[in-house]
Length: 240
Length: 259
Image (spheres, rainbow over the protein chains, first blue to last red):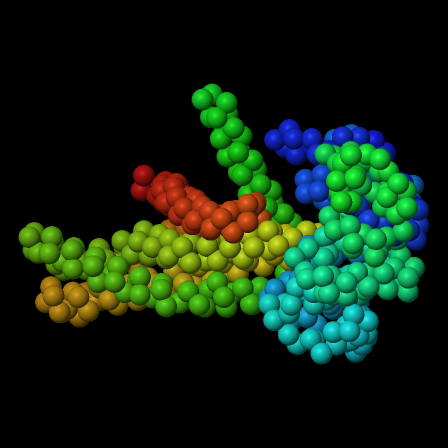
């Protein structure tokens, strides 16, 4: 269970981007954080990862408030989360195989054969086993996101998967492929999924629960039918 | 206007603080050296071995130019016999370390800043943090250690090539005999001079490595920010090299009782 309680976050220049966000995400739920650029949805994701520290409020992961934790104490919590950043954030000097096996080589004491087997298994899961020796630059945008999913899954036992605009810059067909993969990961691995997106179509494909952000506030949270029934002018414009 | 100056001062202090914290973090992560051996060797090749050409050329032409200028001036006083010593002392104590550091700062500092800057912009550094891998251990420490090992080696090599270049010019232009020149070189190569010249590259290496990493990791603002960071890294490292060259030079002279 993830719970944000009255979270406020400002950048060093004083601009407040989250104005007291309260949100609860039960274990196993697939949530889409939807909103225009600058509405605070990516910032909330970074708050959950401990990359941004809120000035006010609590962020509870299974009852543990992560806000006051030091970087070192955040590590065990972060290891339960997999992240797919915008454009994948693959290490561009490493091959696809090295990217996927990176965490295993860095942090786990595993025999080489097991690392190789796990790497192949994860690449097969995202249907990219033929890209093992390619560099990220040689992949398309959609392939990079899929490799990023494989890299996240190859680490420790995950409970939460976070996706930051995983379909931005992709054509509709490739975006659909990525959304299907996100759905597949959530269902097969029984993970909580949180996806940040500004694309309505992708949010509906992936999530059971939709959260709409406007200017650092939550404007709506609920299911798809409730969203369509909502009379708020901003939401109506978003749905148009 | 005052707000602008205060803002600039705060920014500068934040950058200094960031660089100092990186240096402390690097020292703390020296325990990871055995585990990061491969990363360090890779960086030694990229940052050090690949700088061989430019530092060799710099040393050669610096030595030749100094030999030529000193040769002309010393001929006025009939003191060409001291040319080998003058060239050697100038190269070993001052010009060799400074010119090598400036060339390496231009090449290596820009490379480190642009590489780490693009990783920062592309969220690869955040990806490392989220995985639980400390970016200082993985990215900063191997680069600083690689420069720390390679810069003194490059400096020694540049010194040797400069003295050789000086010999060529001394013999061809100043018509000095090889024996006279090399006798002067022998007089100039004292333990004190070598020590004074060899302390500097270690200090400069820390400046170059930490400045490149710090500026790179603070990069923001897309490709434009990356370009700005690369330029800033070279400018900051070069200025710091010149400032610390004076400070270290003064301290060495003081320690030797010459100042």
